[in-house]
Amino acid sequence: MRQPALVVLDLGLQDGNGLVLLDRVRAADGLASRIDPDLLVLVLSGRVGDADAAAELHLALADAQSRAGDHAAAKAKYLRAAELASTAELRELLARAAAGYGGRFVWVRAATDPRLVPLLEEAAAALGDQDTPLRARVLASLARELAWNGMDVDRAARFADAALAT
Image (cartoon, rainbow, N blue to C red; front, side, top):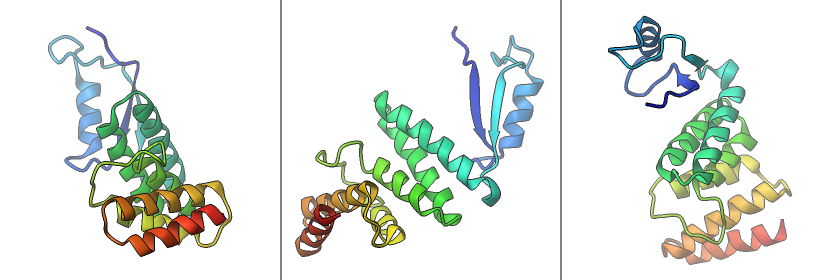
């Protein structure tokens, strides 16, 4: 049975306390529990002071998961990175997480997801009028989703025009 060489642990787990899980790892005997007590654990706190580093780590993991084809896990990490970035007002990180959540390629439509358009709108607002490739990607993704879902074709056209002008 293969064991991981490293575990990234978020202390702010949504369904429990990361410290409890860390204690279980450290108390493991390595046999009955199948957990190596010497397992290297990288602990993230997600506190505002650490939000930049935590969001970057979540983004890196999400990118790796996306490239590996584990899209469900990647989307969860992109959302977590976006939450951290939004709370800490890290605009570029928020936009990178939103763009990743929307899919690696602008021309490939993401599955219908009620969180995507609001996340892209938040990212677009956070970036303001910056003339950057990231803003163009966020606007193009937003235009794609609005047009594809038939939500608001006129707004989609305006976002598409803004993306092209960026």
